[in-house]
Length: 281
Ligand code: PAF
Image 1: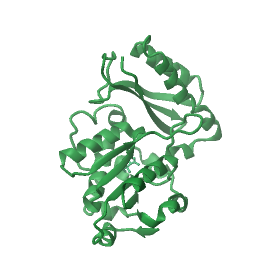
Image 2 (image 1 turned 60 degrees about the vertical axis):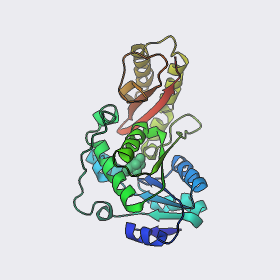
Image 3 (image 1 turned 45 degrees about the vertical axis):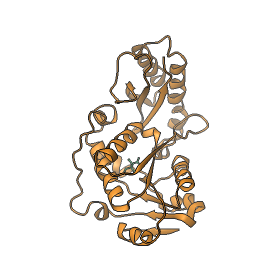
Image 4 (image 1 turned 180 degrees about the horizontal axis):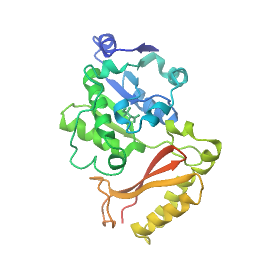
């Protein structure tokens, strides 16, 4: 597998190869969810670039940044099956932020205002800054992102069209453990007791979906909070139902429109998010 630490090395390696390039941006601590993105990129492109960079500007909490799991050797092992067509790009901050390690300010017309945008100040400015830098420096044809971070995915689509970067953005389904827990690098930070209790998040979301015709949103939220907080280690940070088109939370479900539930739950100090689609009424 080719490993580069600067975008100029990546670019000069790919320079004469008029091939399609799929980019999978990550912060490392890879799991099967990331592997599913790499698999899709491998099916659709001649070359895949996987970037590993823990982006400081998207962390609103310094402790969270310090604790973020790092496992470069295990990551390389997981990527080994793709090594014939894979470039691993592991930059230092200077390569992506040549001037100052600060985020730019973007306006995504409201997509960035709620859920993660409201609870993690500056988070999406940080994500958009690093993704813009990756796109401009690596020139991929396609880029792959998981739907677990659905709000991030929609913001990256908006970034791409606002700046006319002409990259095809591919959203890929959430990959879950057998017990329903959405795969996330942060899962490795859970204690054994927390790990045992967190499948209740997806289980409760499924129960809500099963009752979506009878329950209003306030009942859904009360049910979610009660069910999660029965577990002593878990605390709900937010529960929202938002319209898929604009990601604005609603109090009532509109007929014939797509909606999703978005939740954030703390298991001790580890923060987990999840999202599911509600069926059309
Ligand atoms: O989803 C992530 O892992 C990060 O937010 C991303 C897109 C790699 C930007 O740092």
